[in-house]
Amino acid sequence: MTIRIGISGWRYAGWRGVFYPAGLAQRRELEFASRAVDTIEINGSHYALQTSASYRAWHAATPADFVFSVKGPRYLTHMLRFRDDAARPAMANFLASGVLALGEKLGPLLWQFPPGFAYDEERLARFVSLLPGDTGEAAALAREHDHRVRQPWLEAGRRRRLRHAIEIRHPSFCQPAFAALLRKHRLALVVSDAVADWPYIEEVTADFLYLRLHGTQTLYGGAYPDAALDQWSARIRAWAAGGEPADARRISATPVRRRRARDVFCYFDNDKKVEAPFDAGRLVGRLRAGDAAQGKQHDKPQDEPQHKPQGKPR
Image 1: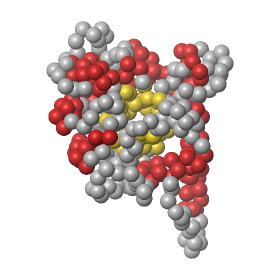
Image 2 (image 1 turned 180 degrees about the vertical axis):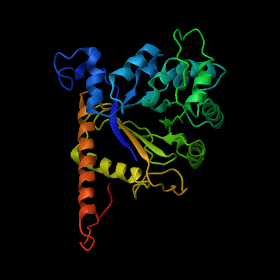
Image 3 (image 1 turned 30 degrees about the vertical axis):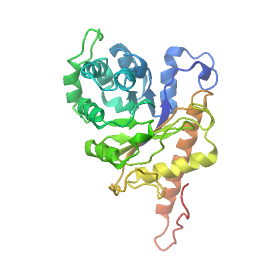
Image 4 (image 1 turned 30 degrees about the horizontal axis):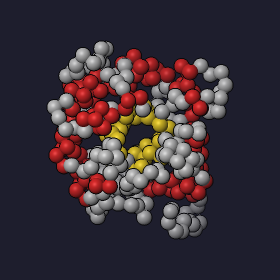
């Protein structure tokens, strides 16, 4: 299993002189942030097509084992909502813009649905049909790009599977049929924690988990207290170990398929007051401490009694 804890975006004016050292050149902020966390969501791709030059620069600025997730364009999710023939060209443009230039550093693709987008089987079927299953399929679809992409990147590189995560914000999705659709196509349902009135679901629908932590006091603001991070650490460990928390909030009765392990991606999106990178570091510290404690338990003699934790993580 791989647990990656990171941040949503990295270019925020309020972080300068607080998270980023005073005087650090803006062009070096990603270099700095990628040494503090091991994964980052690229958010600019949600608002506008990025360029292949930017993706190549981001790849070059980060460590060899770094991973980006990339947020899909709102033109698809919020404007078109997959309802007409323009959806396929829009997906082709997104894929041709340079996403594949991230190579082995390309992690999950994040698709955030707007609050007004209700569950619609026909639109969801159209959406799923557009999602490339691997980099080869993505490169093939990218070749259908139009004039909006001036410097297309059409190289698939080593063929590998692409992961997709879906974040919902309308309560109509809270039904077993939606969970079944996600499982059928191995799409992850984002665990979205926020003060906003969005559905909070912990349904395991893929071989990885994707968490977005949006803040505790306001939307995108408010640090996570120690007790909350303790709870998140325990829940992440349960998912990563191939199971789920005992009190997981689900929308279906389908038994979770146990695995030896699952990858977990967790992003802090409480960036308004610079909490995100520091909360990410605090959570990483808890997970590492847990690893160390577990290692000590394994080092104990076989006849020494093992103490099991009592109670639920929440």
